[in-house]
Image (cartoon, rainbow, N blue to C red):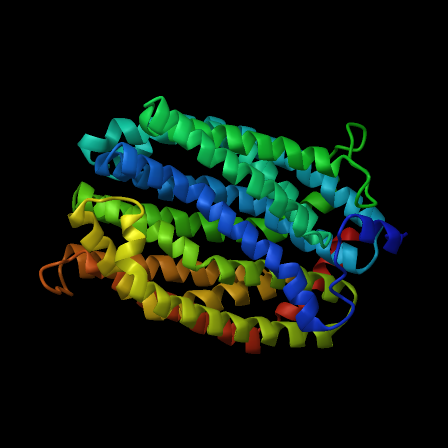
Length: 468
């Protein structure tokens, strides 16, 4: 029997019911903490590269960058569980089904432990072979292995933070995860400065600072969920896996996780192409990826907010609000992505200088950012559409679109950059970014067709059927 979550408890825990009130104001109120949280997440990720690049040097910066695509592979599995939890909880919250929310939260936390333990063991075994497979340059290999090994050990802490934050956002609370992120980001910055700049621990110091920060964030978010702030019950007695709930979460989450895994695995192949150009291009590409991630933050926040917005309103049966909120989020994405892309083209060399003072790296990084600048709308719209349809429980099509995207990107990157089909000023590495632009455009077209013509709105019915 569904049980309503009281309005009193919602107010005390800063939860937002996105099924009520003005669509735009509610969307913005929920989204702004996610944007700020994403900013601090990216700062969290960028600090390692900035401190290492400035205090250790370009080769150390390249070593950190060489691990990035592999780190994304780990995070892909974290998304697999977290995405399913967000969708199911947001729909149950919208339907005022307290029992369903409880089952989902407890099941998700147990799955996080299982998945985290498996990932840690598997990637510790595969760390060295994977770096070898990516043809990591010999002059940065040892540092890259050291950094990646420590980051792997941090997996469970990261997974619990991501899972816990996904649960809180599904319940309509985007503020508390922001506060925790700010604290951990500041802690990570302080740790980097002390361990790398002060104690001269090199890339290992940056990795240890990240590990400690992620462990703190994972513990803190679990403690938060174990309290009574959200009208749910999470404790040692309730922490168990509900079979039907787990099946529903995995049905939604596995395609989402596979989508991220395929993208990160493909990025690893692209990384191997990048590595063939030497450590300067590897370091430059590392800065491009970090700055690119920063530019994408608002679009990622819109996608996350859209997922929760659609989930809650589908749970409440308010399809008119789903339509209105979807159109608003897409329009907002286009405006923001174009504005930030133009700004990036102007400030590109200054942005790269944050990471390094080596002119060769600055030049290559600037070329990459200015190549991508005007085309962020392709990626942004794809992200937002993915959040919208995933909020309804439809994860398969975004996964297929991403599979097409990355397969084509690998092919084009190989032809453009390695084989030299596109050769601008004898700088073959430009082909890596041109391939990315073309494939993001194709991905956006696929998702637009699915948004207007697909049956994603009916996917939520399967959630109800599986839970009944």
